[in-house]
Length: 164
Image 1 (tube, helix red, strand yellow):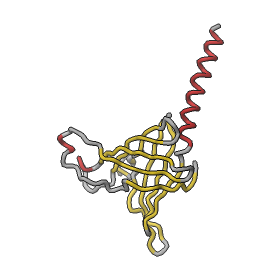
Image 2: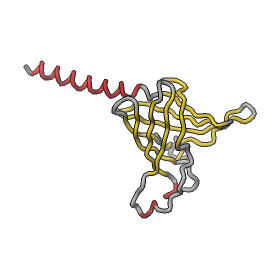
Image 3: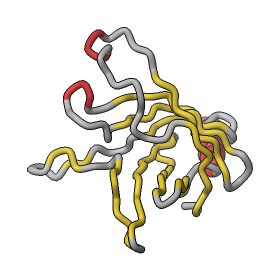
Image 4: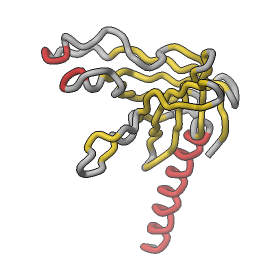
């Protein structure tokens, strides 16, 4: 009887895990949005039942692609530490991904080093997605003087470049 219960529990957890991954599969991959010679790129991946990601902006000048900024930037040269993922969230239905995004490419440091927003990523078919970011209102007095605007795009349609 213990073996049957153990087998049942194992199947239950495995099925639950696979269902979570299935709702994430549509989002994982590389996405982009092009505006003249600038390209905003997003990498979404699934890790520990969460969707995580990074973003960066490139500009093409005379055929050369130059990185303007990237979210996974080096934050400590001495210890070689990068910022890590700037996007984290989940999808319950496999069509909408909600989470937090950190805009860490703002100029300055201290309280202006990171601006958090609420990310809403909605699939518009298999190769397009609506990317919308809203400011998270806070009662933290230190964050009152935060810049009004994000330095990353806040309302665009991304195209899926490739799956993972």
